[in-house]
Amino acid sequence: MDLLKNTQDRDINSKKRTLTYNVPYRLQSPFMPSMKEKEWDVSESNLIAKINQEQRLMYYFTALNGLSTSIIVNDDWANYIIKNQEIIRGWLEYNMILYIQKRNPSVPGIADKLYPPQERKLEKVKKYWKLIIRLEPVREIYGNEILTEKDISIDHFVPWSYVAHDEMWHVRE
Image 1: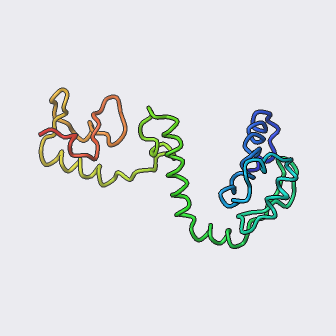
Image 2 (image 1 turned 90 degrees about the vertical axis):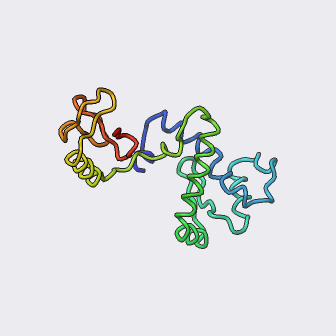
């Protein structure tokens, strides 16, 4: 946050200005039915004055100063957001997925790309495969060679090894 707040990078500041041009005002538009299209086309100070007259908004503007504009969040909304943050996060993620998928129809698995992959605990899988190899021969599917514990790598590729996954369909009897 400090980097974004204090940066002198022209490109970042340009993007910040673009983002803050409408978002702080239009974000609450669903809660302001009295604000019609033409009412948005006024100076920034007049717009903030009109918004601050509305009832039950999430936040109100306390200072107008470009990128340093400040707001105060309504206590009822702050409590609601804190109490329901998981529901709100799920709603936001769902709508973000819909938005991204609509604009990138040929990209598969958008939902899986929102966050970095989580670390998987594979110790049980490793023990499982080592036990299987000790009990009966397991053959790799391409060369039909019998695999040993040294040949198997779980969930990552080692050039001199064969890869075994935690899915049973990867094993050929």
